[in-house]
Length: 206
Image: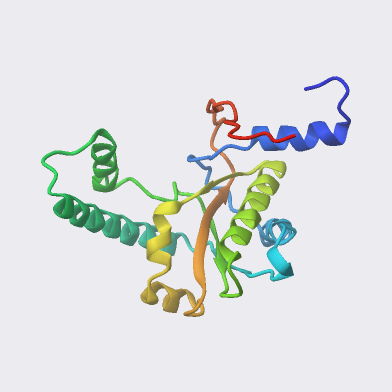
């Protein structure tokens, strides 16, 4: 860190640089007060025209999380087969082979056995609701890191969570869109940093 930085500046930048996508969790549950702290951090995010379009679903039922994981894996497998049939491609790419192995593994849980899933949903209130929800997601994940917790966005869950059947089961309004499913929990270990490329600056008008 720069020697001239204030403690506040150092703390903010350390949080941004220290946050990781955690994919291994201890079975330690997260209490209600902690979940509410994370949600309160999420709704402090910027929001276009002060619409605050976000709404949240919190799932901590481990049996339900396991079942959702299995449904999502089945959906992804079916979609992968349909995609390849459309392309009529002869073989699997390296990434497709990796995905196929994961989906075929009975032990693979898309939520990585985390005990809490927070789904940030968007209400239809304007053109920027999805962007607002992702801003809220970043706030939530940074807050989780600040509380000593791990988090990870689970994009594989999005198609399933937006099906009418699952919306009915979770009692989500039909018109909301599940945008950012985020698992949260106590990390089982240290997640190493992943190198990032330097910012690509396309234009710097002065």
